[in-house]
Amino acid sequence: MEDFAFDSGEIIDSLSISYQTLGELKVNPDGSNNAVVLLHGTTGSSAHFLVEEFAGALFNPVQPLDANEYFIIMRDAIGHGNSSKPSNTGLRASFPKYQYPDMIRADHLLLTEHFKLNRTRLTLGVSMGGIAEPNRTRVLGGWCHERHDAWVWSCGYDSCKQ
Image 1 (cartoon, one colour):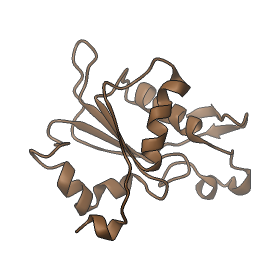
Image 2 (cartoon, rainbow, N blue to C red):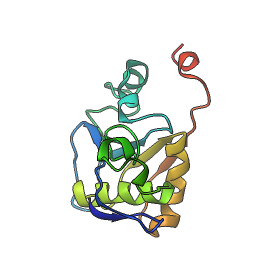
Image 3 (cartoon, helix red, strand yellow):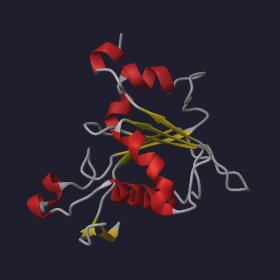
Image 4 (cartoon, rainbow, N blue to C red):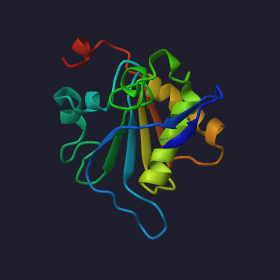
């Protein structure tokens, strides 16, 4: 994303939003599609959705997000995973200050400009991702998903995998 403008007024020449996908995108003539977006938590990244305890319970055949049925997009938010952040851009302390609206706009550009989607089937957010998603309508106006579920991970990783 070239010349990305942050809410702070700062502009970054090139903003990179990293992502991983599972499944195949299918778009119907009416624009509906099988895209599902997963938004990670504050200390996470797209890689966290692929650990066996999580992926094994969601993405296999006949499970809720069967990758044979859905196109699953797992992005790294600004400042997380392999997306642009102070440590991988060379900007360090000069990296623009970012907030939820910046992440939401970057997600929107990824979905609309890169994947050419005008909506998604479902968005699930864990912790920070669950907080950001309800703000999407406020930040973007009328653009929304067919359905929204916010997940708030309320237990530690070790206790959840039991």
